[in-house]
Length: 606
Image (tube, rainbow, N blue to C red; front, top):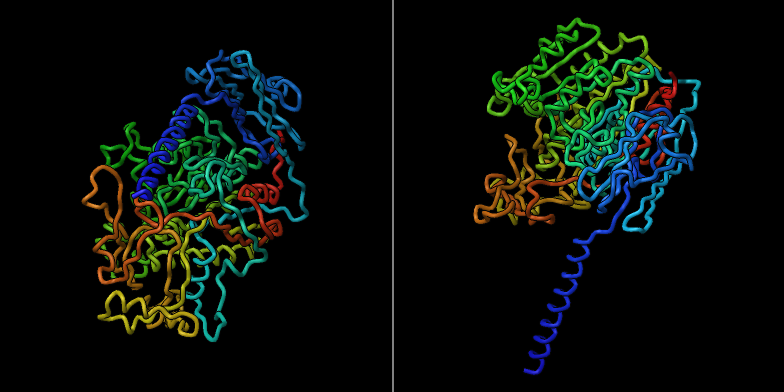
C-alpha cells in the first residue's frame, strides 16, 4: 500500500511539473521574441547577375515601417543595389524592407547585416553569401537536358534493372541507359525548413540554385499570407531565355502545373495555385517554347469543362502566341510547327505506362476516353525536334512523374514500368547527343522513397495460401532465387509481371496496409479512412487491397494515408560538356550551378 501511495504521489507530482512546464512553454510561445529574417538565407550561393528579390523582415515587434537598417558589405543596401527599398508593415507586429529585381554584380563574399531597435533595445542579424561567376570552359554546352525521375531512389533504379535487363549467376545481363553515362554522384535533398523535402522545393533547388520551403517554387517564403507575393529568384527557364535567348521546354507525365514542371519556370509559395501557374507559363520571360503533359483543366474555364475561375481559355492564349496545340499522340506525331508547342493530353496526371501502353486492350475504366496518350519517349522526341531549331540551343526538363505517384501507394509494377519508360527515353536522347555532342544530359531524382529490395518471392506457390503462409514464401539469402522475368519480344518490359520468382519489395515508412506481392490489375489505394473515427484523419488498411495478403502495421502517423518521402541522398548521372562536375557528393543547389557553368552563362551581361 505504501508503494502504491508513493507511485500515486510521484504521478501527481509529475503532472504538476508537466503542467507547470506546459504553462511556461505556452507563455513563452505567447511572448515570442523579436527576430530578423534575411532573404536569401544564410550560406546562399548566388550566380552573379541572377535576378532576385531581396527582403529583410522584423517579426514579433510593434515598430514603425522604418525600423530596419540594412547593409551589404558595410554599405547601405539601397546604395549597394542602386534602388530604393519598399518599407512596409505587413501586420501589426512586423516591419519589412524589400528591394525587388536586383542582383549581385560580381563574384565575391557578401555579408548582409540588419539591425533594428525594439523597445529601446538593439537587435541584429548577419548572413553570408557566396556570389560566383561561371568560368569559361573549352567545351561549353549548347543544350542541356535535365531528366528528373520523381522519387527515383537508388533501389528503384536497381529494381528497374532487374526487371528490364535480368540477372543470372549474380551478374546483371545489362545496365540501364541512365547507368551507362560518364559521371556519377550523389545529391542531398533537404529543403530550408524540413529535412524531408517535397517535390516543389527540391525541384526549385535545381531550377534556381537556392533552397526554399515545402510547397514553394522559385521563391523564398515571406511573412505574408499571399502565396504569390513572396521574394522571387530567377529560375533556369527565365535565365537562359534572358541571357542567351535559348529555347526552353518542359515535358512531364504529370499535370504540367504540378510541382516539378512548375518549379522550372514559375514562382509561388503554394504549389497548388495551378490557375496562377498557367498564367505565369504565359509570361514572355518565363514562357516555355514546349510544354507537354496533363493538366488540361487548368487551361479551360468551368463552362468549358475546366477549373479556371477567371472564365478565360488559356489554350486560346497560347494559340494566339503562335503555339500549335495537340491533345493526343496522333496529333503530336503530325506536328510541323518548329517553334512552339503545347500538348495537353489529359485532365490531371497522365496515366502510367502499365495502364496506358502495357495492358492490352487498354482498360477504359482506368484511362477513360484518353486512350491515345503519347509515351514519354514520343513527347521528348517531339520536344527536341521543336527546340533543336533554335540556333542558340535549348534547355529541356523531362520528368517521369509517376515513379513518385506510384511509389506513394506502394504500387511496385506501375512505378517500375514508368522507370523503364523513363530509361528508354534517356536512351533516345543519348542517341541525339551522339550527333550533337554539345549536349549535356543529366539524370537524377528530386528526392527518395523508402522501397527496399528484400529478396524474391515464390508466386507459383502463393495460390490458396493464408497470410501467414505467404510470409514464408519470401526468399532470403540462399533461398532468394534469381527472378525469372521473361522478355520474349525484347521491348524492355517483362511479358508477365508475376513471374514464378519476382522481386519481393518492402517499404521503410508506410501506413497500415495489406500485401500479397502480386500485381494489382487496377490501381488501388492502400488505406481508407477509419469509419469509426469521425473527427480527424485516421487511416487503416484498405480491405479491398490484397484482402488475403499479409497485414503490415504502419510505422508512420495514422493521418498519413500513403508511403512518404525519405531524405536519402539520390544518384545523379551525367554525360556531355560539363558532366565532370556531377562526380562526387553535392548539395541539390549545386545542380543549377553546374548547369549554368556548363552553358557558360554570364548573367551580368547587358
